[in-house]
Image 1 (cartoon, rainbow, N blue to C red):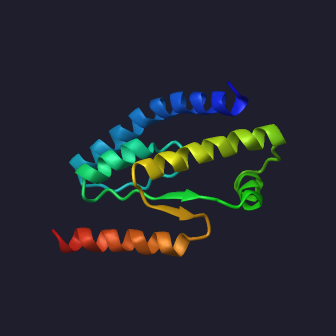
Image 2 (cartoon, one colour):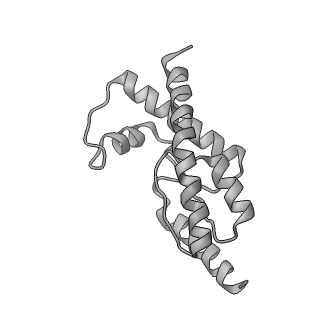
Length: 134
C-alpha cells in the first residue's frame, strides 16, 4: 500500500471513533430541540446522508478545493500554521479526495472552497423550507 492509502485507512479508523461522538451529539440535539454546527474533516459523509434522510432539520454541506495551489495555501495558511512537505501534502490531499468522493457517493451538497455564499444560500434555503413545512 502507498503512504496515501495507509493514511486514508488510518483516517477511516479515526473517523469511526469521532463518528460515534458526532452521532451522540446529533441524537441529543433532536431530543432537546437544540442546534449545532459541526465543522471539520471528521464528519462522515455516510452519517451526514443518514441524518439528512431521517431528520429534516439536519443540513450537511461539504467543501472541496480543486485547485492544488489553493489547497496547499488552505492547509498551510493562517488557520493551519505549518509548512507541509511534499509527502505530507500528498497525504492530506488523499484524505481530502477521500472525503469528497464519499460525499459525492452519498449525493451530498459539495461546494468549492470559494463558494461560501452559494453554500450559505443553500443552508438558508433548507432552513426556510424546514420552517415553512412546520
